[in-house]
Length: 66
Image 1 (cartoon, rainbow, N blue to C red):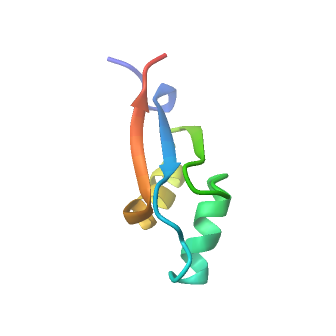
Image 2: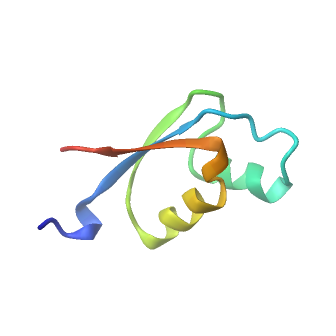
């Protein structure tokens, strides 16, 4: 069983944050997603999970195997 802090996820911006609240646009930028179809790999921490949950309607989330 892997430790949760070792898990990583890849988040990809698949919908534009234009037309959504400024808070949601800033959350996408905080995740490092500045352009459409941009992807970033993050360690799955409570902070990252919260940001992903907030804008999950704009993202595609994949678990990354190391």
